[in-house]
Structure formats: structure tokens, C-alpha cells
Length: 207
Image 1 (cartoon, rainbow, N blue to C red):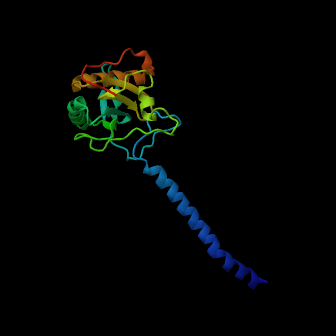
Image 2: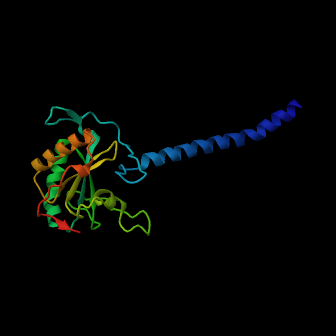
Image 3: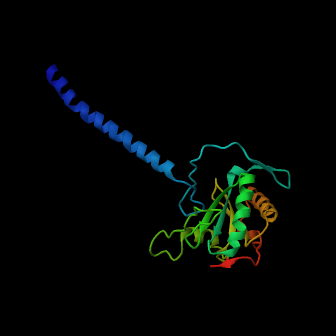
């Protein structure tokens, strides 16, 4: 009897080991899938931010009212086009300012191409064939803001709340001041549609 039990155990052992290995592989693949996302799904319905980068040291900014915030909690999204003359002027300034300030920029292209400042740009995608407009465009421009380039938004990467910054080419002092204002609005939980018209210039290309 004991011999039969031992033989049965010997037969089952490889099966159990294989099942255990299969479970481990499945867990690794699931973890790989979670870690594979390269950027947060800002503001998309049903999506949550995916933070894959290791924690960065705090990047503190003092607001006009004295409050201090960590700029790592915010990012700038810019909609651009390689064929837009104003994006060509604005993007190098944005890239240099963001690198100096330590602000992450996520570029979306409306013509399918990056440029010298953002050679690898994200292309807005439709969730399905029946979707009339790409999800990212609907998310950011769905409140009636004209679709044009360059257009910048501030996003809280922890909550996916997006605030429009500026439409058109502008200087970085203006953009930085507007960013601080929108961070204050975000901290105070003010809805973006209660903050008045979005600043803009004539230096933009309508889509």
C-alpha cells in the first residue's frame, strides 16, 4: 500500500511542479504587462495612471500663495504637428523649459509625425471603428476647446485631472505662470470649466 502511495506521488509530482511553474509564468507575464505601459492613460474613461518609473526625488515648486508642491505629481501634454509652423517654434522652447524645470512632457501628434524636439510622439487612437474621434482628443478637447496646435495641458498624474494651459505659441514665462495657476486650481479642486477662457495667441494651426 505504501509503495502505491509513493508511486502515485512520484507520478503527480511533475504535474504539480508543472502547474506551479505555469502559475509562476502567468504571474510574471501579468506583472510584465502591468510594467510594460510606457505612460499614464491620462483622463481616459475607465483608465488609471500606470506609474512604471522609479520614484524620483521631490521636485518642489513654491506657488504664489506660499504653498509648495511636488512637480513630479504633474505633467504637461502638448498636441503638436510636424507640419505646424507654430509647433516648430514652440516645441524647442517647451522642451528646454521642461528639461530645466524637471517637468515631464507627453507629446501627441495630430499629423502622425514627431519633430526635432519630440521625435517620438504619441498618435491619438480610436478605441473602436465606431468611435468618431480619438479618445485622447475627446478627453482633452471635449469641452469645446478648438482642436489646434500647439495646445498644452497640465495633468495631475495621480488623479488624471487635466487643465488646459495655453493654445498657440507663447513664451515660457507665460506658460510657467499659467502652470502655477492651474496647479493652485487643482489643489483647490476647482473644475477646469469654471476657470474662464483658455489663454491663446494667433500663432496656432487649426485642425
